[in-house]
Structure formats: C-alpha cells, structure tokens
Length: 299
Image (cartoon, rainbow, N blue to C red):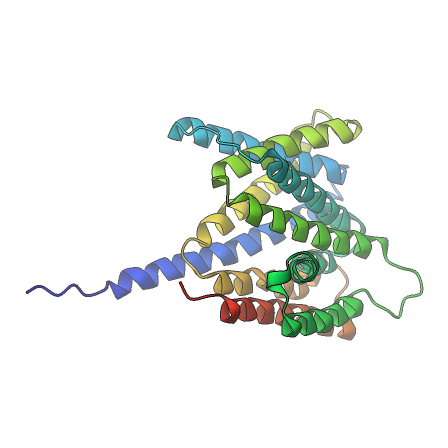
C-alpha cells in the first residue's frame, strides 16, 4: 500500500511566492507614487494623465491576454461592473491627486484606510456582517487617521482630504468587486475596469491629455507599468495566501511609505503623531483581517 505524503516543500514554495507577490504589489503601488513625485522637477504632467495612462496600459494588457488565451467576455450584471469601474477610477484619481498635493507617505497611508471604510459600510448596509468589536477597531483606527491629518494645523490639508477620499472610494470599489465576483470572472471585471475607466478619463479630463515627448512618455509609462504590475501581483498573490495573510502584507505599504518616503523623495518626515496614526491604522487593518478570519464560517 502506497501512502501519499503532502509535498511540504511545494506548499512552502507556493506560500513564499504568494507572500512575495502580495508584498511586491504593495511595493509597486508605492513605486508608482514615487515616480509621480520624481517626475515633478522634469516634466509637467497632471494627475489625470497618469491615471489615464495606467488604465489604458491595463486595457491593452488584458485585451492582448484575452486574445492569446482565446477567452470571451461574459458580462451578466452590468451595474456591478459599472459601479466597480467608476469607484475604482475615482479612487485612483483621488490617490494620485493626493500624491500631487501632499507627501507621498501621507497619501499612501490615507489610501490604505479603505479596509476601515469597508467595515463601516458593511455595518450600515450588510446586517449579517455587523460586529461590535470590528466597529471598535475602526473607531481606534479613525483616531489614527486624525493623527495623520495633523490636527494641530488650523487649515485643513487639501492633499490629505484627497487621500482620505481615495480610501473611501477604494472601499466602495472593493465592495463592488466582491459582489461582482459572484457573477463575473476576473478577466471580464478587469476588461471593464480598465476599458471603461480609460473612456471615463478621456471624456472628463481630455484637456489634461496630450501627445507626450520622450521624457514625458518615460514617466507615464514607468508609473503605469508599476501600477498595472501591482494590480496583477496582488491578483495572483492572493491565489497562494489566505485573505488574512494577504490583507496584512498589503497593509505593509503603510510602513513602507512612512519609512521610505522621506528618504526616496526627500519629503517631510512624519511627525510623532503621524507615526502613531500610521501604526494605529496598520494595527487596525491587521485586527480587522484577523477578526474576519475568526468570524468566517467553517466550510
């Protein structure tokens, strides 16, 4: 009788790949914002053009992939696809606008508040997912958001408000994504997200678009490649790690931004209250991920 033993080395390799892929996605999402800041002394490109370039490159890649794999689109619930697209496009626009108007660190930290807003929206709209402990964790995290927003300043920082808006709209995009996955495959969702998002940017921000020269094209393409690569890495990375592991590793972008921002772009360092706020948000994202795991039903 032959006994089949599990291939632990293979399992560890898949886990390691998943961890590296998700961490890589966090790094490349962060790198995209660094490239926007690095471009400022050399070219004049507005945030909408960076968003358009990222979505357009993603549309080309997903279209070519579908042609090579001979896959077809299977849209069923168009309102979910449209909701996901609009929310995601607005979230990316707000995120890049925050990078333009505030520090790279603060923009990334506030963008990573989206798990908190997912929990808040779930409390109000999904009765089956109401959890008092999660609501308490969110309340603590919003204390962290307040610290990052520098409450000592009398005038509100417009860039930070853009960053917070990116977190709110990203949460809406995530909720739409979770619902849309019940009816659509990943390629269909990505095709609409990139394709319709490109069309929306072209319609509403055509005045910000132009034919770039070599230097402008370099920064646009570099930022877009980093953003799209981050999107694909997080998509495939979550195939090999649990949702909890993926959520925690994704939240490492908070710490990356806080530590590397002042070093790589010579931006202002976080204040003591800003550091406390960043750690509060990171801890809250981790707590919500662990709480979600403990509350999930056994299958």
